[in-house]
Each structure stands twice: as structure tokens, then as C-alpha cells.
Length: 323
Image 1 (cartoon, rainbow, N blue to C red):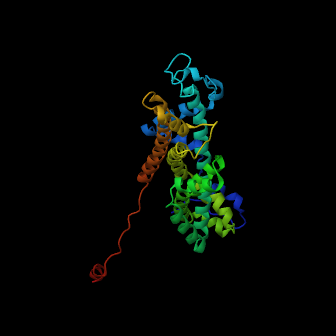
Image 2: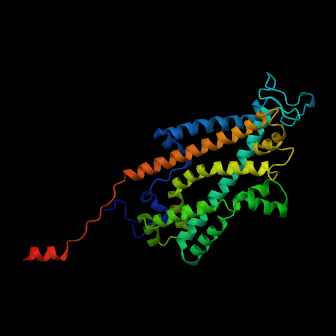
């Protein structure tokens, strides 16, 4: 039997907050995940915090200008002045790692936020309205999800040239589809909840129900998927830059550093190992956070009691008792 409060006939939609379950934000999800003490989540948070701390403090702690060249000190090894050595143009590798990470992580984060917001809205509206709109959205998802991001990037760069806008657009065109599919499934389940039905009885518009009830209450799985997808976005950004389709000089990111290091891998292998390790550690940390949130969600579902259907008595048994 439901214990949710029954809305009054004259109750406005804005007064339904007490009937709506708590909507956790990203910070509360991280805090609850830490309380679960799952080791993957804890390790991921520590690694990501260290990476973000370094990237945020880069303008103040970077030892050198990443674009300053010193041709007389090319491919130098680690020293007190250059902790990670220098590249083929005498630029400080540590400074380039720090500044390049800001570009890589920023582009991946912007792309992920756009994909998550766009996909969540499209999926929730499709599930809420149903009919031809739902069919159109899902068929579009099936088509777009077949195209890799690199193929879309090649097509857009051929039309508009390289640049930040082209790179973000290439990662966004197909990146919203997993979020739309996930949100649609969650919205179909939430649409049958009591507080949604109460809002419908009170005459709330469908768009109000979607943005006030459906999307906020489906935030936990979407946040978990966002962390899991961030690593994919970061690797894709690096791959496009490695192919020369991403960040252009004088700017640089981790993928561009891999491209520059390729001819010098035998003489200075650290030029390729360091940016590759930076991509790996950052993607791994975010993925571990997403896995920790997903594991916590599955454990919570496993603890929920499941109603066991009781079959009706057979006709023969009823007739025997009557005799």
C-alpha cells in the first residue's frame, strides 16, 4: 500500500514537492558513493582529484611556458629545470602535459555535458509523448549509433575545417544517443509513479512533468553513465588530435603530444609514454567512479523486496473443498 500523500483537489503542481522523492545532485551522489566504501569508487575519486587539482593550478605551478622553444636543448632528459625533459623543439614536457591536459579534459567535459543534457531531454520527451515522436527518436538513435565519432569528424572537417567547434560538434552528433536510450527506459518506468499520476490529475503540462519530475528522478543512472562515457570522450579527443583533426598549433593536447612524439620514440620514449599515461589515468579514474556508482545502484536494487506472485487456487481444489 502506497504511503505517498494524496493531493488535494485545489493543490497546485508546485505544491507536490512533498510527494516527490528526493532528487540527488552530482555532489550528493559522490558523497553517498564514498560512504559505500567501494574500493573502485574511492581509488577513482583520489586519482581524479589529483588530476583536476594539477590542471586547475596549472597557470600558477607550471614551471615554463609550454610554447617556449630552446633548440639548443632538444630531447634533453629529466633535470632539475625540466623534470620530464624536453621535446624535439626544446619545450618543457611537464608544462605541455599540464596545459595540454586542460584542453583535453575541457573539451571532453563540454562535449559530455552537451550530450547528457540533450540526450536526457530528448529521451524523456519521447517516452512522455509516445506515438510517432517516440518511434522517430528511437529509429534516429539506431541509425546514429552506428556511425563512429571519427567518421563524423572526418565528414565535418571536410566541410568546415578543423577547430574547437568542429571537434565538439563531431563528438556531440552521435554522443547523445546512449543518454537518450537510457533516459527513455527510465522515463517509461517513472511515468507510472504515483506522483506523476497526481501531477497529471492536476492538469500539469507534459513538459512540466518531464522537467519537474521525470528528469530529476532519473539523474542517478544518467550521472553514472556520464562518468562511464567521459573516458570514451577523452580517448576520442586524443585520437582525433593524434590524427591531426583536433587541436591545432600553437595549442596542444595529449593527443597532439603523442603525434609529435612518434618520430622520436626510439630516442626519447618518454615523449609518448607520458601523454599516453595521462590519458589512461584520467580515463581510468572517471570510469572507476562510474563503476562505483553503478555497483552501489545495483546493490540497492538487490536489497529491495520483490513481490512474489501467488497463483490462484485451482478449480479442482476449490470444488474438493466445497464437497
